[in-house]
Image (cartoon, rainbow, N blue to C red; front, side, top):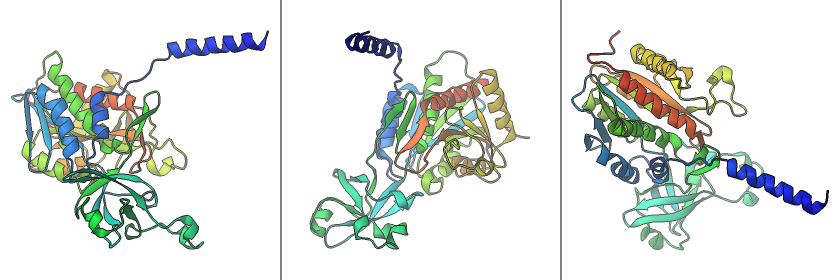
Length: 375
């Protein structure tokens, strides 16, 4: 066989494979949320995305003084269930500008400070987005001892490419907040990376579930509200007021959870959870047993894959606040498996996000009039 013939056949085989391959397309609503810059306390861009995609299709829509968004279908239904996912993300807040125009900051939420330097950032200002780069002393200029240290935040700065304090102050102001300038990208099939899958994936899931209930066919007995909550990263603050104002009979918080199928995750310590294995269903003191059993029963009946997690304490999610609001709310928690949490490139399988949406819809449709979470 000649080299020319071999080359041609190889090309044909590759073309055939390409034609058969089906490209995964991420939902536009999810992509818009992931691209929205919403550092905790300044969630305006994400709020606008929710307003655009959700307000036109639901029966009732409102916002509150914390910046939460509430989307309700079947407002006269009974029982009432609240789905909650937070739209805020990790960020940086400007605290000081030095004489040469270098900008110093504090972190919003729990950053790994070893990863902050050398990042492109977008700062949200009243005049628009200002670009910059996080910097620290180059490794060539460090002593051997300095190279071993993780820099503290006051040893890192944002470089706006200016030469004076006056130039910097014309661009940014004390209290402006920013995020890493790193967007969404699919890397393989339905697996994607983004800086803020925590918790845009969960927020999308709860809002998309309500959107599908609003446009879908079939009888819905329950009142179902999705809350896009704010300020979760600094203490579940939006969820506290959301749970109080809604005071539902049931609630399910949706956040991300650690996929422990990557190297160096000791599953004896952290449990066994894999990306692509379906939503993680939490069980423990933070979780009402009635809603837990309903979630698992519905998942098994609908053949929706899921994973079980035991949590011995109140979780670091909106579920913690919702459970103890008012006289108590029967609360469950779903976590979307995620690798590299609180880094600029969090990884999620969007199949897990879709299964979470399906499970929320199925749970809502399973509720019968008069059901409560007492046990």
